[in-house]
Amino acid sequence: MSDRIAAFLARHGLADAARRPLAGDASARRYERLRAPDGRPLILADTPAPKDDLIPFIAIGDALAALGLSVPAVVAADVDAGLALLEDFGDATFSRLLESGEDPDSLYALATDALVALHRRFRPGGLELPVYDAALFTEQVMLFADVYVPVATGRPLPAADRAALESAWAGVIADACAGPASLLLRDYHVDNLMRLDRPGVAAAGLLDFQNAGIGPVAYDLVSLLEDARRDVPQALAARMVERYVSAFPDLDRAALRRSYAVLGAVRHARIVAVFTRLALRDRKRGYLVHLPRVWRLLEGQLAKPDLAPVTAWFDRHLPPGLRADFVIPETEL
Image 1 (cartoon, rainbow, N blue to C red):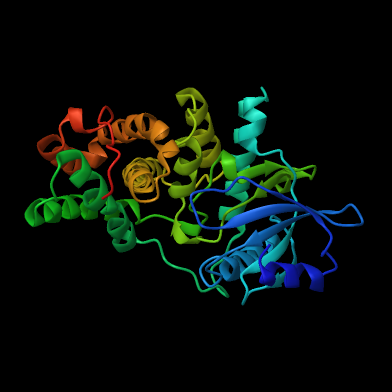
Image 2 (cartoon, rainbow, N blue to C red):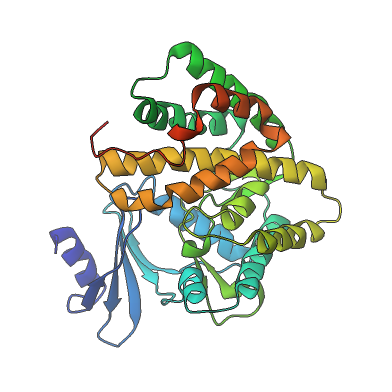
């Protein structure tokens, strides 16, 4: 145990607490479950970049809690050290519940209703958050050109071809970002949702929202229903989209569905690049098992007319053999 963690725990009467590491994610954050001497369960969060992780986690969590949504309460924190003690929500993630045979409709309905509540109640102000606008989405999706394409083709993407792809993305993303915006949680999916014994939408415990910003409402909906790590039946996804849009009678349904398609494609293309980079740079090849699914989702959106300029670029520069069926080599970038 590092000296800074030992000192932090000692300050809060937890020097002798039982500790057990929890499975991490793709980030450098570390989590441990503690059992305090009085039997109380807590989560120790160790964040190596508190300015980017812990500080926004606390601020955004306070904002979400004020809206009646459930986030882990911060019991204690040392932001300079990047350490926090958090409320322990237990083990009932939506993904575990689904794997144990729980009814998918009820879980996805709860997740959808929590998004509806967020988008109804949130008002900007008081938080300094990034704005997920067309420029930022375009910049982020170009990770695909810079990471995946060179690996698949065996050479860097020529500048002219990269510029053509960037222009294609920018053209479709601008329209996708033109509609209503709200707090965008960014990684809203069943691995980051927990079922709690609380009433209404508070039964959905929210995790991993420190990278939130302001952006189009469709983004978190497509993150939930086109999950990189889990197959979501199309019929279920369609029911949840309808559940969402029905909650907003004045919403332009056609515009929402266009935004859903384009931002879904943006998310999937970026995830292909992120998983490739994790495999090659960080030796985390376990993520590659999800690439066929992500490619299926991406291809599904590329087939829609809203993505026509991007689809045309893919057809010219990235033939099918360099997509889902391409095997990422075990070499470093």
